[in-house]
Length: 54
Image (cartoon, rainbow, N blue to C red):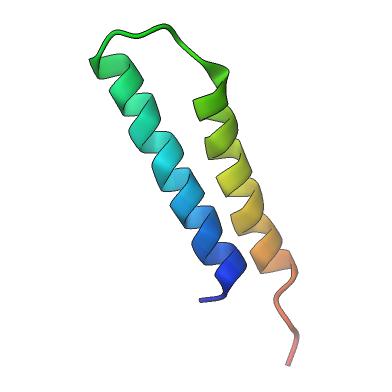
């Protein structure tokens, strides 16, 4: 697994954890957490596009 995909999964996991915390603690919705999830998905997608062809 390359570094870009691993960092994408890490950022996606952090975004999901913060979204769950936001709903459990009944906090105001913030779109930064949703942005983190989308950024993580974007990094994972880019890692598949940048995969070197053998």
